[in-house]
Image (cartoon, rainbow, N blue to C red; front, side, top):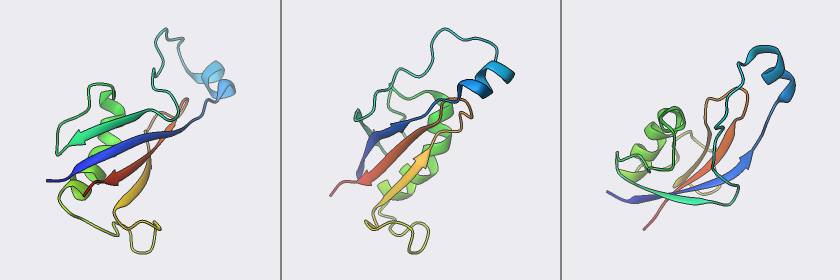
Length: 100
């Protein structure tokens, strides 16, 4: 299996939605833009929360298994994917890239 590089590309925050719908939380996502993590097959990097891993893991597994062009014509680099976590208040976008 190939190692997959996971780069935090962008973090967004929607204060209006948080104020309207979310109970206050103390520890939001600690990841930083530009931070790089690595996944070895099906193992979740310790820095990723379970929720983010649920969104990323199918793509990570496909790329680590040699999959390419996961959604036909989607990515310029066929051995990559751009995936966001499913947090509707603070979504984080990740670039996944299979290493050689």
